[in-house]
Length: 269
Image 1 (cartoon, rainbow, N blue to C red):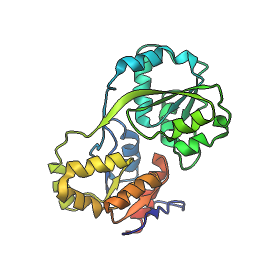
Image 2: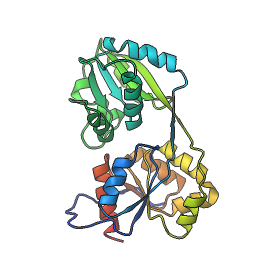
Image 3: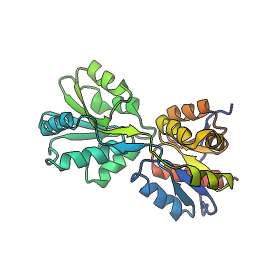
């Protein structure tokens, strides 16, 4: 099985474009427009096929209680762009964000989503962002006695909360959405893929990979394994490698790095 490749995009791209390349974007509905715009600006074509559905939380009353008590928190952490969008929608429908509340993001994509909504001074790791990188920042070294709320989807990893609680923080989850598998018809995508009409796939989570493979079925899973897959984090790359993807490229976080990696890749093929 091929190893995960580090996408070689840290080069002078010059006039390299994505002309003639078709990129499958699997982000949840409504969260891939910025990436699509950048791909199209580089000459590429985008096919949207969301691999994760974002649904309302199972217990909205619990989320309402947290939102009503936001003033007692010192820091709000957002785990994903979906957490930003859904959390912001839920809060602003009921109240204003507390002016003294500090805001943090696990990575550059999530930080960019916060900036688009007008948040400033966002705490976020540089480069490869994840929960461990966020917890390692100086702002989270001394959090004893602090109250921290984490906006996220239902379920997920416990690494960040465990790290902050071990340092004396009180940590509350604001679970503002549920992830699910979309009820999508794969037939049009499969027909296109069979004709060689999909040249690369962008995946943002292991769950998205699992959902995509399940929706596509055995034939589609074989096509997915034979198509270059671009991922922002080694953990997702490991999931793709374990699934049997022949060529997995690690791009780093954020749309800019992803598009640069796509350009560099297609300049060579």
